[in-house]
Image (spheres, rainbow, N blue to C red):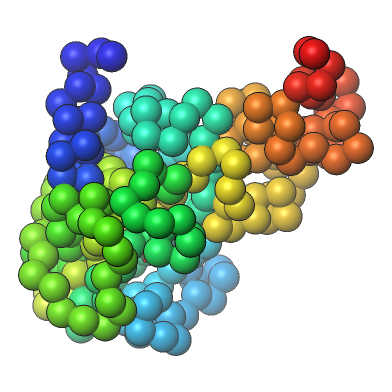
Length: 268
Ligand SMILES: O=C(O)CCC(=O)C(=O)O
């Protein structure tokens, strides 16, 4: 394990989260900010119509289908190494979305991202997520609220109940990384400016992705992805077994007929 990763891994194990500071540069933050403004405008994105997505929060889903600049996000070297540590080498992109909390938004209910998965808790992570700070994240503008240590709890939070939490403040260019079992939620925005983040969520290779990447990403777009990103999007076959169709990988079937199937059975 590298010196750069070990303090993050210690915090992930102890607290269930860590912040990778100065993980991307200000020019990237500016470019992502401007492009998310463009997408919100062109796609006519309106605020969420429910208490979870946020009545004063806008979300742009399926970002890998919407612009080449989003392709750098799933493969961020430090974050991806932490995901490999938590979820295994064959982890997947579960979803990639922009979350903009507008002035006046109230705090999102505290939840765990894995709470729909019916495995008795506590368990090893099967989902793990990250939040790229495109603007500064402050207590006042709605920085993500977390309850350290709750990734080891024996249950998920009760939806809508108040819990004491702390605020994951970070400057833009930082990335909050957490175990999918951690209790957390978006904060209230009491300022007059937007809080914008990009939520890059991952899962183990053997469970379903939250956003269906093989349906969501146009095949011509997926064809130009690096092999690493194609695998992350689920175009491979987990351990040579899970996700094949008639002994072919989704990649072989949809992207490149010459790519190897890698079926486990052929190795026996
Ligand atoms: O926006 C945030 O800070 C957290 C959002 C979140 O946890 C979610 O929507 O699941």
